[in-house]
Image (cartoon, rainbow, N blue to C red; front, side, top):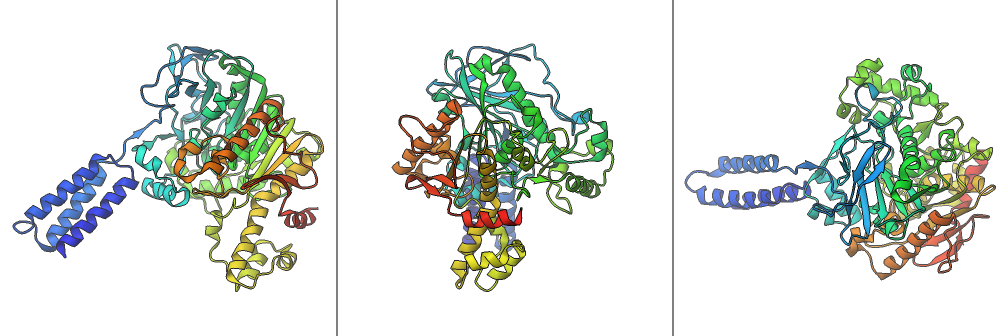
Length: 579
């Protein structure tokens, strides 16, 4: 029995070491410890005392071999260095990818670090640098709530069915309040007037990073599109609203610091992208989830007029009259800011700027998470709904849509839905239209109740905003709407499921995909690229995608075809409520 518990403890420790991305040598240390304890058992380490000593040794190995914190390389360690490129602040070099078809410039500062007195202020111009900047590693991800690495790896394996990152990335990515840097992927060599995609990462405005592999820009660069990603302030550090900060601001703004970072990065790209071969008059802003909500806001901000041409928005929108998430009115934002001050016991801007960034990022306010944009009168002067209603949007063409099961993972927080509590849950969640929903979606079995509730939740939380956005925008510009339904060996058509298809990154988890997935990815990626080039996703090789009209969308699934949006009846109910 003693040996059984030793081996069980070793296996559990090794599992944790693997998931926590500890150094590989840690596994060797555990086996050496096991052998030593077996050899010393009879003479020195008997019974419960010996077992407790073994547990202490395992804990020590976990602590002493933890994964190092390091920056992620732009391509790979030791990559060939590019020729120098000049930008406003100085001169920099990047690195080539494996086959030297793409040049990557990572960690380029587009603004000063928003630390110290610059915390909760509009982003300031980046400082010049005299020496050549080696742009060969991605900058730290923006400060955000710490997630246990073992839990993160386990989630990656369970939900994405991807073990590759845990095997290969035996380190912990760095995190910092100093994160206002961008990355540029360009085709190798000297090319000019290339279209540009400016990509805003997702993560509920509280998490995420600029270098996630699902939106790696190499595939776009290989097709003569320059791809830009960047970091911006998140959570309370990016969206905290405070009337005292509003007073000290020269623009009388507060609550939109992360969004203003996005504007600053877009301005930097406009000023410098021609040096990388890009065409500043042909920029497409793109994003998914909170990045898509941000694209929605960028499309309606007076600060970005003339800074981009087209917009791509995936799986989130704030154009509904009352958005489901990512946007709140200014009074709500101010009240939430007061809640943060109460929880931190810091009340003046000076006191708040002395609170460690880690503490702010890990504080959950009493009344909710600070992760929403607001109409501050500067970055946004109207709600997106009002802006589109007045035909004052900034883009000239829009590609937008969402996934069939976009909200399924979020539904895990809703508790068990069954036939017994189904009507009550519908009444609680949608009181204004509950009776109509229950007539349209009756449920007599547990499986039917769960399926219906999920359908309604997805349509309300993700689909409806795109419906409103498409209807308003299509009155004055071309709109192309999609509905992603492809299931696969990864997360299928759940939230973020379309990303590796649209951006050509199925290689991240190749065992999860088959030939049909690669064919669909090729279709989607080239449609996205064609849209970035021309504002129209169609080409001589692909001419199926009709402009949005009367709720028609293109389905990307086992088939690629034009269909009627399957959730239109729910949207119409919501339209009637929002009149």
